[in-house]
Length: 304
Image 1 (cartoon, rainbow, N blue to C red):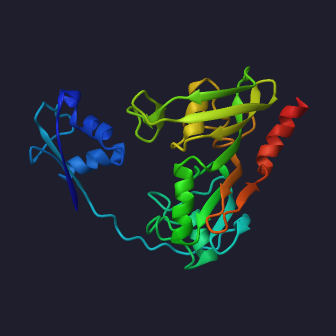
Image 2 (tube, helix red, strand yellow; image 1 turned 30 degrees about the vertical axis):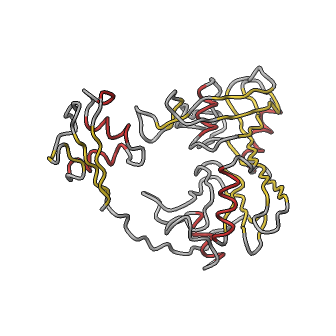
Image 3 (cartoon, rainbow, N blue to C red; image 1 turned 120 degrees about the horizontal axis):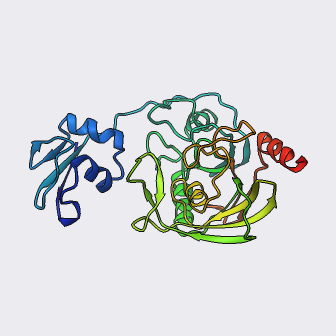
């Protein structure tokens, strides 16, 4: 068990216990807060408290985190579109609808299960038990390029490149509305939403998030964009595009998701990756073509 104590200051004075925890510790989901309070894993002044308890200056809130349970990850024969592979890295073109790694509600059927079947024991262990080889992620319904590290040296190297903004990530997105500017930069910090812990939001107290886009093609009520991100915040492109009034088609989290094409989930594709190979030092420039469903939607729009 990991135990952390927080002494309440003016910032959280008068704030409900459950709300304060959600704001204070982003690693705890909103759904988990109530359970932890009920199970006395969240205490106030070393005593059980109600979710509705309003904190006062000087209160000591204790958060007790359980040790993560060991998870046995099964190797599964799930088809992979391999774009590049050698002894150090594997780059795949992830299909839409595939979760990257196991988690609540997704114990198997993930990209990790697939790469374990392909790579067996040849995966970096730095990502932990449920994230072997995973250097970076893309959302379940975002398709496209993803780098997998086959050893710890490669994992550390690629992670450092990402941290230092040395990996160029280019996405293709179809958004609702006709974007008037040919190109623009969105520089808005992003944080966990205080209203819904499953979502991210633009917030002055958030972490720096910078997104650049260029218009590739305009249609009657839609725009095709090429998007580059300097930072890699969770849901960054989806949050930024929704914030400026051009949500990604099919995104039911940051818009209503309704569209005449019957698309479920955001039309966002990781199309290009540029990075330095962790062993050879060679500049890698990899591309993944748009999924068939994406091309089908564009064909309909062009015919209109």
